[in-house]
Every structure is written in structure tokens, then in C-alpha cells.
Length: 403
Ligand code: APR
Ligand code: PHB
Image (cartoon, rainbow, N blue to C red; front, side, top):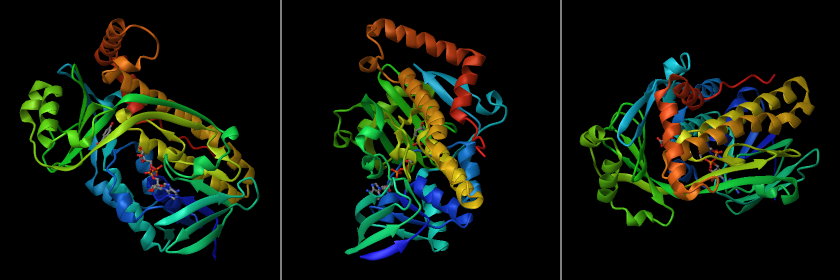
């Protein structure tokens, strides 16, 4: 057994774990990351890339913002199209100057990984049998196997940044946590292509045939999504079938301009709302997808992960720098307030824009429910104050200083 010691053990090298590690390193706080898969596998995951100002500020504080700032696109607004009728949501005007940055999660993860290896910070990739121990004691520890060698990592705290399927949340005894979950009766089929995007801004489309999203990665790379039944398999969808269906769901003028091409990647993701309360247990803190999942409609997943990171980072800094070790007990309470805001907004955006028959939150029959939804959309899209409600939540609540 090889013995290791650090201050904060981080489980998972996704965006949450890597960002936390980078921020702590800049404060002289040591971390070791233990990750189940290889760096290439982590970077192979295609995920959303709409960054709120709070996220951008945090990446700057971590000293990793250079490429993001030169290659990311500032978006002043986005569109919502309902049955072909397009409404522009002017984020900048409606929020008093806030915008979002369009920069893929894969890219930000790559930047964080590179920064970590340049600073020679330790990451154990391709680790198995990861187990957490002594969470209620003064000195917790992690055991894992890497390249055939068993390791024991002693630490002060453990940050569980290991995503929805990770080991951290499962280590908390079931009697000490409550989980809230809603699984939606459809998924998103995503397609990435080296084609010029159909629009400068994102277009969220509600149509009779279901939801579609026109997103982008750059001037030459597009990302599109279609709402599909959960029973569909990615093999059921040829590229041609995807493009045909997308054209039918986009507003007519956008459909006419759509440039199609071979897919670089195509996958189906289920939609889920999920929260684990509390987000901590003794010396273990759950961060990002390990603690909560949102449906992608509000582009909140990555931003919410970053707000957990910001809160935990501030508390750990205070514990190490000022000796205020008691403050870390407040992590879950502070983080959950923001989590529930983002959960509610993501659920609401999803329920307004999808074909939601099977997902009614009450037992209204679907005809009257769809009339109510149409009227709600009319109110939010065609009144200034309604648009402002959407814009302020989409652009994200500011990260408050908790110190
Ligand atoms: N041990 C070590 N690492 C693990 C384990 C384990 N038992 N289980 C999972 N992991 C790793 C995964 O391989 C993954 O690299 O933890 C990492 C978790 O990364 P993400 O799932 O990307 O979660 P997070 O870093 O919180 O990022 C949140 O990702 O899913 C999106 O919408 C979400 O954009 C948000 C962001
Ligand atoms: C994406 O570009 O992948 C994306 C953008 C916005 C969303 C979801 C996904 O709401």
C-alpha cells in the first residue's frame, strides 16, 4: 500500500474537481485528484457551453481564462421561437449589462487539465476501487487502486466532485440524506457538426413536433438538439433523419438557411432534475453533478457546479487562512439556496418549451394544460417584465461573497 497525504482530496477530474483544485492551489492549499477514467475519456464528453459571468470570474481567479477569453463568444441575448415565431431575449438590456460567454465545456476542461499538469499538481487518472473512509472523524482518508498499486490518501477534507454516478454521494448513509428526483419522459438527441451555425445566437424552439435547440461552438461548428422519446436509440437516427426533423422544428426562415453536414458526434441524454440534501456529511462535501442534476434547457449544469466550487473554495480558504474551521459546516446550507433556484428555473424552462403531455405536474387534462402553457409563454415572451424574468435567471444570479 502506497501512502499519500494532502490537505484536500478531490474525487473526480471533471470541471468541478479541476476548477476547485486550481483555485485552492493558488491559495497554497494542496490537493490530490483521484479520477476513475483517463484524461482523453474525460475530454470525450460533449456537454453544454454557456458560461455565466460568475463562472467566467471564477476561471479568471483560477488563472486559466486566457484561451476562454480569446476564443469564447460573448452572447448578448438568445431567441425563443414558439411555433415559428421568434422572440429575441436581450440579456444585456434586460439585465442591466450582463451577458453570457459561449465556450464549450470540453474546452474549459482541457484548459483546466493543462493548467493542472503545468503546475505539476498530482492527479491519479484511471483509478479503481475508490473508497472514502472516516468521514465523521478528524482525519478522513481515501483508498484506491492505480496501475495495480493500492493507495491510501490521508487528508483534512474530501471534495466529492465525481458526478452523478460517482461514489461520494453513495458513501453518505441513506439515512443521512434525502434525494429529490424527477425523470422526464423524453431525452435530448444532440448532434455536433463542422457546419456554420444557423444563427449568431442560440435559438430554443418549441414546435408541435417537440423541442429543438440550435446552439454553436464557433463560427464553423454547430451543436443541435432534438427532443426525442426515451425509447429512441441513437442508432435509430441517421444524420439525414436528424437534419430533416430539425428543419421541421426550426422557424421556417432558419430552416431555409440551415447548412447540414456529417455528424462528428451524436448522442442521447436523458433529462433529470435531482438534488441530494444535505450536500455534506462530516468532512465530505458534494460538489456539482455529484449533488444535483438539472435538465439542460436553462444551460445551468456547469454554472451551478461552479457556484458550489466558489462557495466551498471560499469556506476552505477561510478555514486554512483564518483558522475558522467551523465555517465549513455552512457549505450545504449556502449552496442549496442557489441550487434550488437553478433547479426551479431549469424545470420551468423545460416545462414551457417541451411537448410535455406526459409530464404534467398535476392531473389537469392535457388540452387545458397546453392552453395554460401557451398563455404563460405569451405572457413571458410578449411583456417586458416577463422577458426580464427569463433574462435575469438565464444570465444567472450573481455569485455573492459569503465572507
Ligand atoms: N472515482 C473517481 N472519479 C469518478 C468516480 C469514482 N468512483 N465516478 C465518477 N468519477 C469521475 C468521472 O469520470 C468524471 O470525470 O468524476 C468526474 C465527474 O465529472 P462530471 O460528471 O463532469 O461532473 P462535474 O465535474 O460536477 O461537472 C458538472 O458537467 O454534467 C455536466 O451539466 C453538468 O456541466 C455540468 C458539469
Ligand atoms: C449546448 O451548446 O450544448 C447547449 C447550450 C444551451 C443549452 C444546452 C446545451 O441550454
